[in-house]
Length: 186
Image 1 (tube, one colour):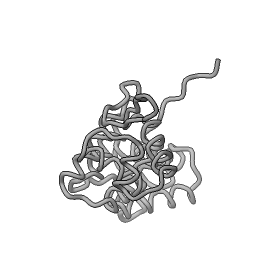
Image 2 (image 1 turned 45 degrees about the horizontal axis):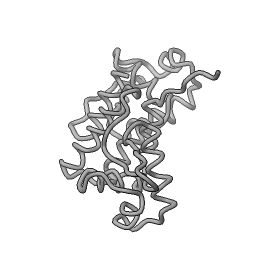
Image 3 (image 1 turned 120 degrees about the vertical axis):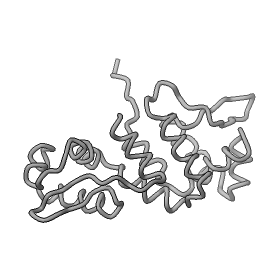
Image 4 (image 1 turned 60 degrees about the horizontal axis):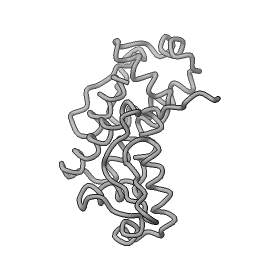
């Protein structure tokens, strides 16, 4: 029997870095549990797109699907088997309550959509490092390190100083701060 695959933080962030999925999640948060057809209609999506997007959210533990007769109803119950699902869902819902836009949420989530960026963030949480030392510690080429570091820098999570030293910054707030906490905990 193959091993059980557990969703990772970076793959979950890939799922929430999508406007369509965020719209569906926000609609369920606002209106409560709903079937695919109702959600598709309310979000002005085809049933196919709504179904695929809802399945992606469910696969990462962010929603629960319950079959009732011929209907599949989605609600905000997270999957307890997915270690970080409740935290990610709560971060997204808090962002909605704070008035952060889908673009804000997508931009923040993309900082964490690659396992190498998570490696960099976790390595820098221990303290500043020079780029060559960080590349060795994270087992990545200098080119890969600079490419991922640039994205983290654009998202406000990393700063470069003189001598090519990289350091993790503390985001002012919002979902980027919440996702950073989750990434460092996982």
